[in-house]
Picture 1 (cartoon, one colour):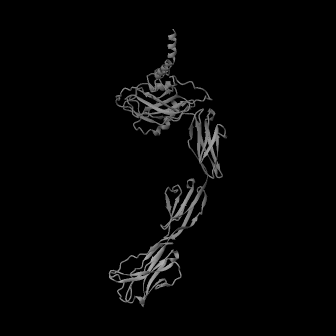
Picture 2 (spheres, rainbow, N blue to C red):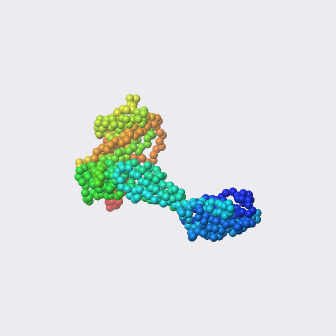
Picture 3 (cartoon, rainbow, N blue to C red):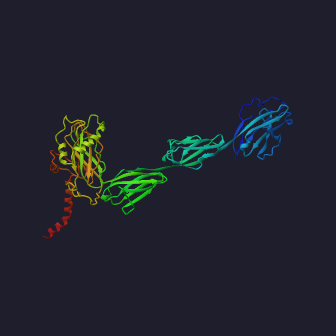
Length: 546
């Protein structure tokens, strides 16, 4: 509670008198409008100048026609009203002033109105103070009152009304989210949403504010009822025999749906190998120690009282898509060392690399992608012989241009000792194989290229489960002149395999080429050093006995 002393604003005549009359007193206070918050205390001033006959006049306070005070006598019985005499004092001209102020404590809405300070005379003189009561906002009506359950697609209408002085402003907002139209809030008594969907659900808040006291607010919970909707986190999940796999479906629905997992048409229960997790909307099927028979198609089916939905996933043992990681500009005019990376849970058997001179419109080849894919799969065999013949048939001359057939080469992956990896060429079920890493990297040196030219390439990989899909098109260029390279003190390590001339000869290749992997002579040298270090003490002991 606080006291507000109402201070008028205005201009007085230079003499400080509103009326020049040496017998009749005049007002030194002007009538004003006062805006006071409910519950506060206000003092309405009324000051007059003293004259020779001031004592013959009565100063009274009235509200409309009701008399509140007369002179120093309080007439009203309202205990919240008090008469406050003004102490007489002289101004700079020596004139005395006096009067009575009216104090109103704990003001209420009913106190609003006009208050008149009047000098009783033959022709009464008076000033009028207008009192406005400021009232904090209060929400009087909200619809729906607490919660709204509504079906998907139906319209939503929410209304909120409030009282207060000044008239409160109504603002709609959404708890921990933006409004359905993307805005932070909406102003107005009515909030309408044309079509409800699952994104409409949430807590909506109506806030009334008029800058008096604290804002008032109410909440409405909107609950949209709809059949299940499934989003597959990863349509194709890559794994391998002996590894763990996790299939995930994001399931939405109200009421909360129940979820069942299937492999093909067989429902999956909870076993030592199969387990299910549910964290919020995320439903997971976890397969421990994947076997060959676990690879295939899976379905997550969600259902509630309003319907059902299905999501399909595939657990694949194929390699992932290859992606190129070599620089787009070669260091040479007629050669290019192209490299790529792929993930596979089983050993890579071979790669199939396609390349060709790019058309002049380098990035306008997408209209031919489908026909290119059909040509690659239909006309090219997966043999190193045919691939090498196309690759090394001679230097590309003027007849080679954009839109021509793709050249291709099949590159077998190497084992740790430089031989093709045939150890795991077994029919299903496969022996569990877990390499040190599922990430495989390969490099290949393309030769006899056309200087200062743009090329494009694609690649795919095969493991025990088959070929993956072709990679995206990769663009690279040759230089017009070779770069001058400083000799390297250490050979560059690019991969885990080696393709040498002996293997090329057995594949029917007609020209030399290299694959940039760790040279196997390194492995042989390290192996020799280790064996020698281990056998040397025994050899010295034998020599000493002799």
